[in-house]
Length: 294
Image (cartoon, helix red, strand yellow):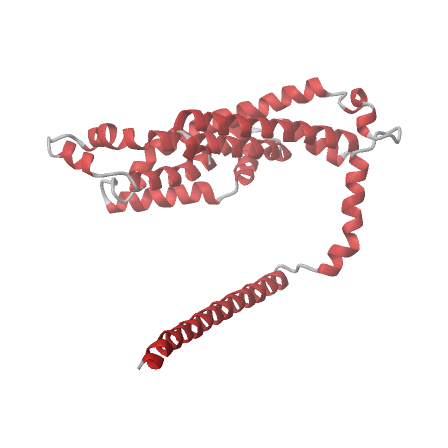
């Protein structure tokens, strides 16, 4: 009897160990299967996109040599050996960079305002009618699906060269992007305050103003600041089609092979974006706490 009792726990332990090993083996098989499917999908996508590794490795030296050229002055010296010569146009570039920031700011402000007015009609829990929600959602999808640079090109053709085209393009694209984000925040809002205010006979507008807006304001502001960071980069690129900002000067330097000017302008844009990212991240953290910062 004693021998049978002492053997029983060992048998159970062996069964448990076998079950554990089988579970681990099944998990590894699933992981290997998932990795194989991912690799196959990646290869098929690369073939469809005509990604040629031979071409990549053959001409990779051209890519490296271009960066070697943009960090070399006309005298043959490296750009950091003569910063005055490298940054000869800093006054003009900073002025155009300021124009880029203004384009981003005005476009983001207009887009956030329009998104604020439309997102309540796009949210499933606050839209007054299904048909209205459908129309507004399709409108927001169109606004964010068309690339901003395409909008900028259309507005340049319509209104001519200059910042106005960039502002309108960023405003439309920001309306679509922020409208979706804002409506998702509203859909996660607590509807009990809305029901309480509605029970008093308040209008739909009053329910939105007093029950929903106080819950979502912090999220709106956080997303708007994040969108401003993105739009600074967007505005820099829109200058390629004549929509104002420092992008116009950058594309001229690229087309005329002013190599050192290319690196100087790129450095100016990168440093500015870094400063804005850090500043807006700090601001979100100060306004909304650590969760918004991450």
